[in-house]
Image (cartoon, rainbow, N blue to C red; front, side, top):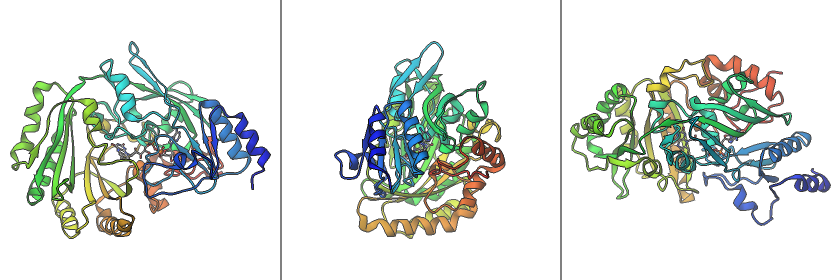
Length: 451
Ligand SMILES: Cc1cc2nc3c(=O)[nH]c(=O)nc-3n(C[C@H](O)[C@H](O)[C@H](O)COP(=O)(O)OP(=O)(O)OC[C@H]3O[C@@H](n4cnc5c(N)ncnc54)[C@H](O)[C@@H]3O)c2cc1C
């Protein structure tokens, strides 16, 4: 039990807000992107700055409270909200500063991808981020960060040059290559295990704000042939090309294979690189064309709208073997659920040229993530969709090796979490022992301390 006077002192000390159950704003503040989670924290501290974050961490530690940390709120497994405990809400910390001359951008942890893109693209600059513009930079960066220009410029975390971090003991620590370099290393793929980041500083790259991209849709009947062709196409693609394949359902209810393209090199060369995808089978629809990068970045926003309910399992692949392509198609063909899909997200390129131990992100040799996804709006569908995703995953898991920590599911076993940090795990445990020995920050792909 918390004493009312302690809670009142905490509230008075915050520059931001403190929400309790029943209070105006509480229900809105506890809501996250994934509508499948309806959790009720005892308190929600909506922080206005690093000082509030320190107060919140100190309060949680002093009262032994479970902590959930919310940046953009897109945790697929609902880890940014908790039942009971303290939710530390960073969503109102939204400042961004671009240093054009130094090609750097500093962003606070409530910033969304589309906001960062808009600020930097105004100067013809960008850092790689994800593919849905309302995702938060915070969780995405700390877990890795795959997106349309990552094969050219690396993961989002590879472009993280500095961070301010509130540690479990309530200190504000700066991490760079020179200052606390071990902490910076751990933030690049180790998730939210080591503290709460209150400022991210990114390297920016000069990009053309118009890129060549968009989806190409094929009939499901051609999916086997196109997906097998795509497997080689994706392996041989230049770094400038990102192509994600999705066995999904079109708005008219028809199952299709969609290949979502983005070429970030010179526009004049784009068609030559995309052309093989146009020849392999007659597309149902071909929307790949010169398009502003910010539009491409927002093109999937509605499909993945706020409040949709989601369940996902995923794993890394070295390649899409022909037998795997056929198995995936079979699993989808046997299901009459229109809200299930399987994605093959493109990796490799610059991502794979970073050594596995150069950052906390180990699986640099992956060429795709295979995502088994189920979405539903109608609560009555939830069980069936999750059951399909779980059984499909059980059948296909052995084809994968490791997984992207930002796609962790509630029922992912701890041995899998440990495995995906690979040979970096002992160093990550040492870092966890140093920065968070009591595991205050455990609602993540958790690295368990050993002290
Ligand atoms: C619709 C959708 C699209 C996506 N697309 C992509 C994609 O294209 N590429 C990709 O790489 N990933 C993608 N993801 C996965 C995404 O990277 C993760 O969901 C990520 O956690 C989102 O970050 P967030 O800040 O919005 O999440 P939150 O739910 O706010 O946070 C998730 C977790 O990150 C940690 N965390 C958050 N903020 C901080 C902080 N400031 N300090 C320390 N720890 C913190 C906490 O452990 C928290 O539980 C997508 C997810 C969704 C839902």
